[in-house]
Length: 188
Length: 167
Image 1 (tube, rainbow over the protein chains, first blue to last red):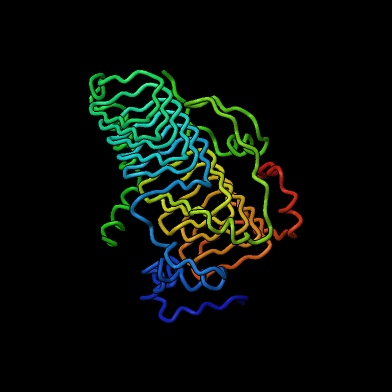
Image 2: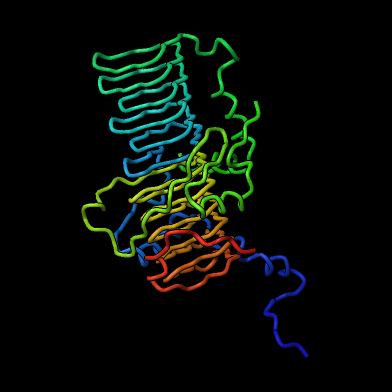
């Protein structure tokens, strides 16, 4: 006497399939597309582009991050970051503020950094305000930039390629990095 | 040099610290935990809707506290507390920590607690934890391993401190 009746069609062949359906529902093949209709129902404001991951990461002026930020791609900061930033290319927009060290291959500063820059190529634009040391290999300073600190052309001289290269293998070793890479290839 | 990052701390420790507010963690750098952002239950006025949205791409890993009055889109990994007006976790996104927002839409993975008036879980969502909500929409296929307590809007309006996490 069973209270529940199973609806398996053929017990032999489809049991494996019957256990699994939630994992691979046919609609989940293109997740962003499947997500759209739900979003439209819940959100009166149509945000059609939100589900697609943009190429560059943006910390907008309304966002404040207290903590670390790492990326294996480019980051644009227009808001406030209290902590270290590591990325391939970091752009600190005018009005943005970073308290901490900015590591990267290329750093362009138009806002404020209180801390340190460690990068191969550093550009300080006319609105830049830099309080702290700049460790670089190649620097460009436009007229009007403010620097309170030392500029030392020592990037990459102490350890292999500075701390920047140390986080890359760590990020690649995690499972998610592999996942994102494959989905990247799909979108590209 | 021994370095303790936020990721090395237990979730509970972060959540407890975040709930208390204003306590310093001596991690990679000494920092003060920002207090909880005031919760807005009313939809944004057009002025603040102009605030540009923040995007964290797939390549991004952020640890710590993310606070914004505008939109936040997470496609990468975030460890820590997120306060936003509207939070979207894309299908490749992963968030470990608490969320305080007016509107939350999840298409990725979340491990932690949600405090939001309106919660939308897409079919690709995977959520573990607790979902404090006033309205919730769950798409077919979403994997939810969570309690979903309903709360009146006044609960969110008076939310100045996150409750201690319970097992």
